[in-house]
Length: 59
Image 1 (cartoon, helix red, strand yellow):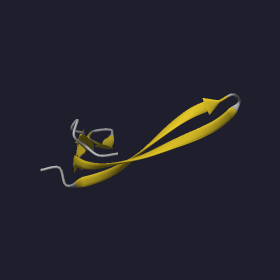
Image 2 (tube, one colour):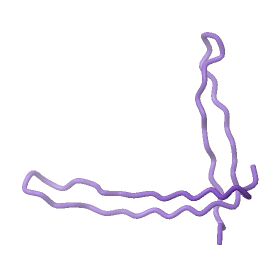
Image 3 (cartoon, one colour):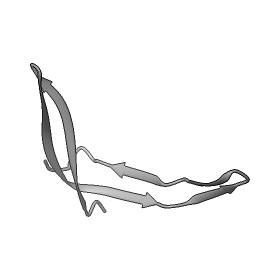
């Protein structure tokens, strides 16, 4: 039911240095969709993403 793996990057400051914390999470559900809306002024994207991370997901 939760077959996907994602990587989350968190930016934080350590004093004046910018640092990044990388966390790999397995056992999640990633559902994305691509779409577009056509208007008189042109086309615009209506992409979507749903990410479900259960409490039992492994880091």
